[in-house]
Image (cartoon, rainbow, N blue to C red):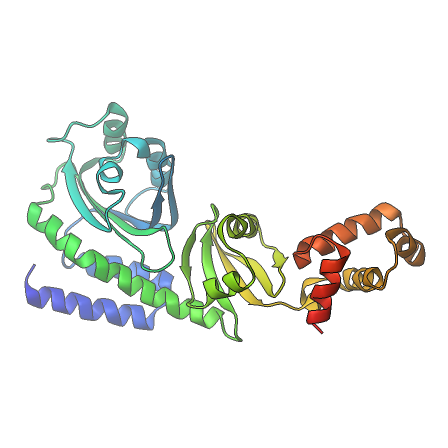
Length: 315
């Protein structure tokens, strides 16, 4: 790749990231990439490689059928790119089925999608994330294979691709965080992909660390819901099919509890028993018990004393 070509590509890439939404920039990125690398099809997004599974989120394809990603998941354990580059911070490799010995399952996958050679790369996301930005480029069986020079050039521009996409995404997250919230994108397996700068500090300040943090994020990643802690309120909303956008903000029990729950909580901390509350509200005792259990869970406490302390500090 000539220096002039690289400079022009990086200028256009930066301009696209500054002026477009992440989704629109992602498509623009592929169009720009075709000017510096020749390929027939592409697949890219974020990935997380663990010992037992490979997770792909917010991924997109170009000139590949909708069945591609599901088909890949079935042969991911045989994929040479994952085996060679799993733990490398920046990685690029090209293979062709004509000169590499693959397991039969992987060869069948390549045949199904008429892939003759593949160029794959990833780079680890900066910050508190276990995810990589990944991209795979493919050429048909009748096309020249990727050269060592093309592989080297691709590795050089990978970080630029990731940084441009992350720049675009950070701008979107900052806009979502207007009003003082901190936000994070979390996968459905509760892995944090991207977060604003103060997100982790808010979680740490509420005592959400280690396993406790993982359990809370797991619940929030399963469906849209609200979680309340001692000083923190977390709200999850769908970002796309595989990602949740989680808002973190200083909590108020008035925000966390419904009007009925606030009424029950206020009666509870005055010293009333659950039976007295049930009689006062003319509902079944089990109804009050369920409400109290929900109140404790939302407020992040385990008893009446903890509830009283949280509500007192919130006034």
